[in-house]
Length: 112
Image (cartoon, rainbow, N blue to C red):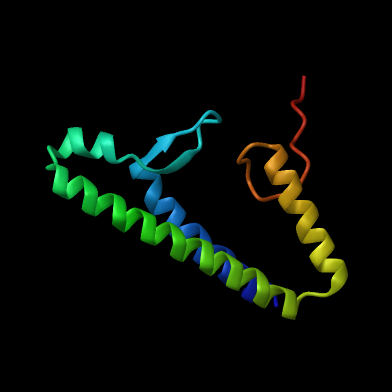
C-alpha cells in the first residue's frame, strides 16, 4: 500500500516539477504556472503563438485538476478512515507552511 501511495504522489509531483522551469513566482515564491508573457519575451512569440500556448496551459491545468480529483477519490477507496484523517492533517500542515515539503516530521534542532 505504501508503494501505491508513493506512486500516486510521484505521478502528481513529476508534472509539477517539470513545470517549475516555466512557472511565474507567486507571493510565497512558489510557481503558479507558466508565465506566457515571460515566454513571449524570451522566445519572441507571435500573438497567435501566445494565444495557442495559453489554451494549451489552460487545458493542461484542467487535466491536472481532474487527475488530482480522481487520485483522491481512488485513495479514499484504499485508505482507512484513520489514514484519511491523517492525510488531511498532513495536507493542512503543508498548506500552513506555504508550500513546504509534504511531511509532518519535526525539523532538526540546531546544536550549540
